Image (cartoon, rainbow, N blue to C red; front, side):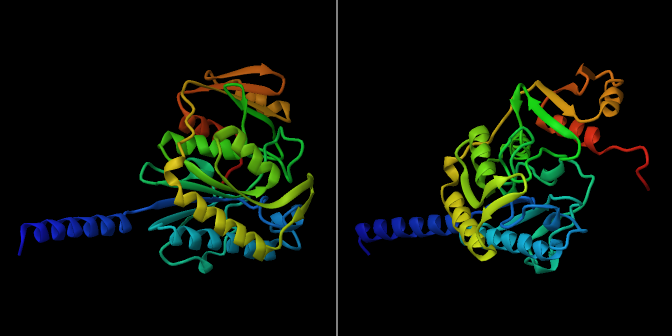
Length: 300
């Protein structure tokens, strides 16, 4: 065999091995799924166990997650974790998810809506997300607690659940690549964390109203945007908030603010607002979980 043939064969073998290695490269995806941004969801009738449409919308939420999972796999995802991040954290019909997917459920849990994230993940996707409590336009706009929180600012920046969770992922060096929800939520997320792919499944008409795609049409949009995001994964950067972080939390009621200010690490700024200085977003999320989740009557 000539030297030229040997050289060409060597190059071909190396190229083939590289291509196979690239095809087999692990791609680990984290999906955080909320419900307010699911197609058709507009009121408590769809969003909580007492609502007359809740059971149907558990199906729709699960179907949107499935569409995202299937699209992620088509784009090369080899491992997927899904965080059930709405309400009681027990919304997804887990028997309908693939057997090799893992699911985070219920509360409390470290890192909240991002429980289970670590630096082994390559991408984060937000499904069914909504805009922030300071946004006057989005469907069911709130941040972490619609019953209690009137504002959440970090270093002066008004934060949504999307930006909070993106910053948690940023602590681990993982970028957010796609968000689905209403048009206001998608636009707000992009303004804060960057030009991620956006799957708009409805258009806000008010706090409790929207023009919406059908569930099937929404799944098609989610699938397409998921593929687009993962196909250009190298275009995204983690959203990192460098510490120390001034976490300003405003609540509707006086008593919680007063009691939080008893802690030496918490400063009361005014009648409804406290400030906590966190070294990073992970520590900030711990404070927020306790501030918004602790009750003396918690049992067991």
